[in-house]
Image (tube, rainbow, N blue to C red; front, side, top):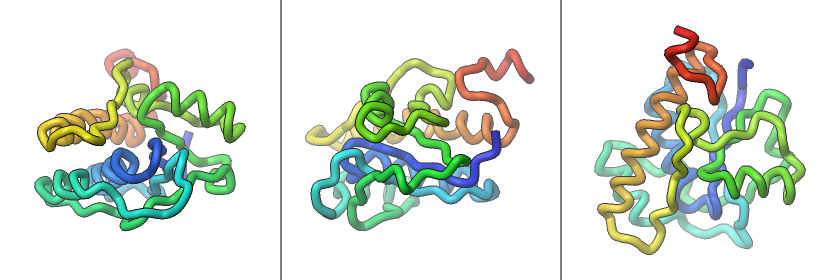
Length: 159
């Protein structure tokens, strides 16, 4: 399927979603996809996570958003790819927001079953590990998007 919009969804849009957006923007500048990030629970807009911004800067990236934004089903069109950080968030999109189509975890987009763990409250080394995991998954995700390989299918089985 061809997507024209990608929404990275995390818990609060302060850390993981914006990090994923920054990494994806760097890895796929030639894909014509509108990329945004949103949070599942954003009671009021607040600044994004400083440690996440620092990790991005160490990799020559900038935080793509300054303030957190709440996810809304109105953000979605039929050609939107929604990428959560874990299975619980994926389930909540279906139960709380009634969004079921084109929803995957970041790990599923890369053919993995591991989940992205929120590093909030931990040291910078955990943020760095999380960055590297996300970067690896996003590189694989971009490869799949460029080669029209379905998520959840082994790359070797279709190449």
